[in-house]
Structure formats: C-alpha cells, structure tokens
Image 1 (cartoon, rainbow, N blue to C red):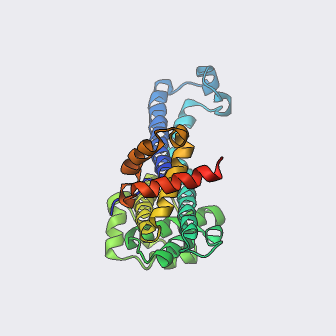
Image 2 (cartoon, rainbow, N blue to C red):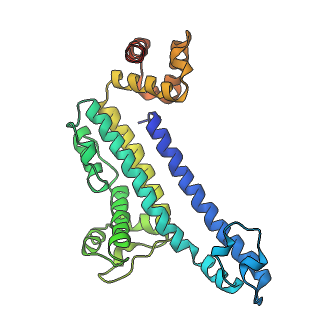
Image 3 (cartoon, rainbow, N blue to C red):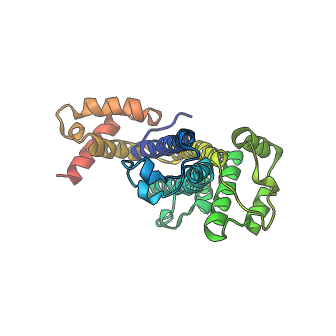
Length: 282
C-alpha cells in the first residue's frame, strides 16, 4: 500500500532525516577533529591557546591528547543523546496518528492524550485492525527499554529488558546483527547498556518501518472526507494562497495527486472540504 504524505507525516520524515544527518555530521566532525589534533601531539599548550578563535573553546580546556581521547569516544555519548530523541519524535507521530483516528471516530475521545510509546502501537493495531512488523516492533521496544535503563537506572540492565530480549527470535536476532553488528539478546541483570551508532541505526530503521505502517493503517479507517479536510488544512498551513486563490481547486487537485494519491479524492471531495474550511475561516 502506498503512503499518504500528509503534513505531519512529512514533518516526521524530515525530522528523522535531520537526526540521521546530524548524527553523521557530529561523528564525522569528531573524527576529523581527532585526526587534526594529531598535528599537535606532544604540545603542552591547551586547546584555547592553540585555537583561540574557535567558539566555546574555553569550555574544552584540555591538552590535545586528552581532547583526542574524548573525541574518539564521542560515538557512545552522541548515540545516548540521539536515541531518546528519535524515540520521542516517533511517540509524538504515533499520538498524531491516534488523534486522527479519534477524529474519524475509530478511537475513543482522549485516547491520544494517554498514548505512550509502550502502548501506542497496540492502540493503532486495535483501532485499525492492522498489524505492525513484529521484527521492527520488537526492535523498537528493545531500544525503548534500553533507553529506560539509561535514563532511570544509571544504564544498568533492568528485569523488563532481560525479559523482553529473551523473547527474541532468530529472525529478530539476524536483523539486529545485520544492521547494528551486535544484539542486546545476551544482556543480563547488572550489565551496562551501551549505545553506539548501531543502536541509532536500528532506532531510525525500525521507526521508519513502523511510521509507514501506521500511515497505511490510517488508510483503513479514515474516509475521503477526513483526508480531504487534511489536504485543505495542509495547504492552508504550507501554501496559504492555494486555498484562497480563484485557482484553488486546480492547485489543490495537483497537491492531492502528489501527496494524497492513495486517498483517491474526487473533485467533489476537495470542493466540499474547501467550502468547509472557508466557512470556518472567514
């Protein structure tokens, strides 16, 4: 099933790409800086003396060798910051999907408000009749529990994480090893959770799959009227002149073909939605 590129989905995809690019940039930057600092090996001068024009260098008041050690271990710290952000963005997107199901009468009022990452996928499955990829769902729940250990337990492995990774299958294990190069399946109580580039990659890959599947599930329950209203609201926010122009219908039909094609909106759907929007925004 093709996806509908509604506004919040596009924003979510943009944020995911930005996180990925930023992570790559920071890792590359740390590597380049570490390599460059080899030129100053053996110097007793501190970095603020060597690079006085670099912003905030005074907070990095170290020798070259000490700085290189920190830069070389930057991956773990960057990953530990990136993973919670990826999960938070995904949770927000899932809440948006549930709010749309509420709007369509498929979810009870207030469901989105109480949704969290641990239960949101199940809510969407229940209210649409769809099913998420079990591999991606298991991966994201592993990452979520690892995040919880990092935030709430000083990075120590929790019983919940041990129980969850114990339910891993050969297919799930293979997927972890293929993407991350390692798996959390052998973690035991008292072990330390360690994030790296592989875990960030798993988080990004799993959330991409799950976000697309949530998009497809929305299509099972949202009708043409709701999609047409979303089309008009999307245009009103991104290109306001397209909903006020005398040529609004032609412009909206073009947007419907590009971003909302799977909804198969008829001209009458768009005309009626435009009239509803104009009536409430006069």
